[in-house]
Image (cartoon, rainbow, N blue to C red; front, side, top):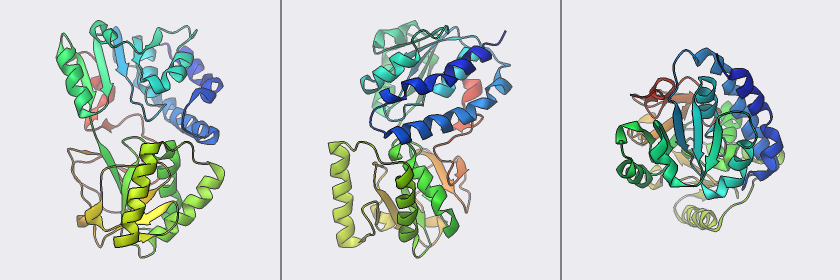
Length: 310
């Protein structure tokens, strides 16, 4: 018998714990949670497969909702889930796993990895290799390493959609656009205007010192070889794109054609686009980059079926 009604009730009660989400503004945390739960309405359509008896999900530190869809599917299918969580998000995960009535718990103890029938990991390539080497049976690991995302923008009317991709989670996470490539002559100005309106509704949260340093470096570079359009948007030549995103600053790269976009299928998580479609990369509409559909290829993996024990 499916646990979906209990899981649905658990998801509905998560609002009470939003004050424990770090870094994001209250409005930003609220929007992120609401949008993340929207896709989970499709979970009942994917309960015809078994779940491992015990799955350990190793959560990333950048997106506080990252574990929700995995937990919802695994729990509703009848499995038990332990969340191995980063210390920065420990209060949030501890709260959402307490007194749920579901076989769900959170820990910061790495030793839990050895107890799992299935380990799902999101982290850096170095973390993936370290966990793989430490597991008694590496075949139990379903790992997603370092990835980045890009945007290809051709229709000026989609500036609002692109602003949402940048505002969600303040631009952190592997599905946030690290570079916005566009042939639109005034793309940077249009995006700056859209971001100004978006931030009036969803304020920027905390920006850490290392992120401030990167923003200062990009801004200083833009003053020399590009343009500083606003305190939220800079423009740089495409050759100076780097696969990094930071809250509060969007980087636009003027290009003539889609062929100028540096797509690497092995490293690209998402291409947000209103134009050409890339081969071998998950493409989504602008405005959907950080709002993934439940049934998808996650970094090339059909995750709804890959959850099963091999």
